[in-house]
Length: 280
Ligand code: SF4
Image 1: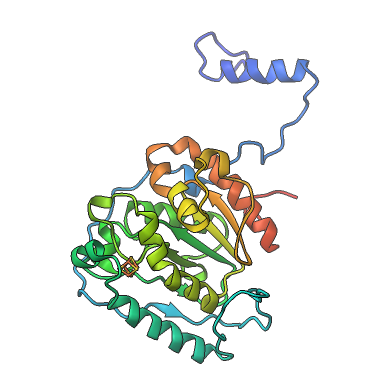
Image 2: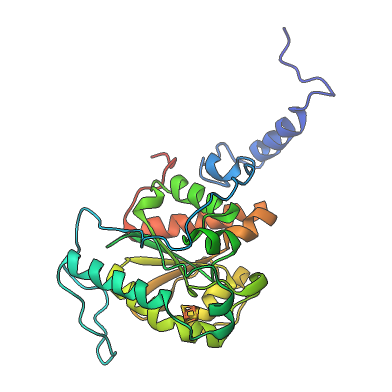
C-alpha cells in the first residue's frame, strides 16, 4: 500500500505544514509547544443537577498532614492578630470566623437575598488558594465555592496540574451571592475583606491564583482587563498572586485554556512542583 498522500487525504495539510517547517530548518517540535492537558481539552460535560442540601452546612475545612513552621505573612507594621500556634487553634478560629460570617449583615441586599454564606473549603497550609469573585447560584444553594459548571472545570484544571481539589483552598472575595450574579461592588468587597484576610492568615496558602478580572480588581484595586493582567505575578500583602482567566470565561471561550495552562505552569514552577506531562 502506497504512503503517497492522496489529494483528498485529510493528513495532507499537516504534511505540507511539516514539510514547510523542515525546509525552514526546523527538524523537531517540543512537546510542550501549544500542549494543553487532555483534562482541559475534553468536551465540557453536562452540568450535574444541584443536589438537595440543608440551608446550613458544616464548615468544610480539613487539616493537612503537615503544618508549616514559618509564617509567610509576617508584615512589619501591618496590623495582624496573632495566629494560633497549633492546627487545632487555627481550625477553631476558622470555625468561629465562619460562624461570624454566617450572621453577617454588612451588605444589606446580599444578606437579605442569600440562601447561606459560602465561606471556603480546603486544607490548612496548602500550596495554592484559588480565589474567585463571589458565589453563584449553585454555590449559594450548596454552601461551597466553585461547585457549578465552572467549578467542574476548575476541578479539571487542578487535576491537570497534578493536584486534587482537596489539596487546595478555594474561596471568593465575597461570602454572599450578589443577586442575579451581578458583579460585586467595591464596597461589598471592602465589607468582606476582614473575613478574607483573616481566612488567608489562618489557612496560609503559599500562592493565590486569582480567577478573573473582578477578583483581581476587588483584591488589589487594579482595573486592567484580565487579558493584560494574566500571567504576571502580583502581590497581595505577602501573598504571591497569579491572575488568570475565570473558569466561567473558559466555558464560553475554550481558546483561553492554553493561557490558563501557561499560568498554572508558572504557579507550579514557583511552588517547585513538577508539570504533569512535561517530558525530560
Ligand atoms: S458579602 Fe461578606 S461582608 Fe457582605 S454580608 Fe456577606 S459575609 Fe457580610
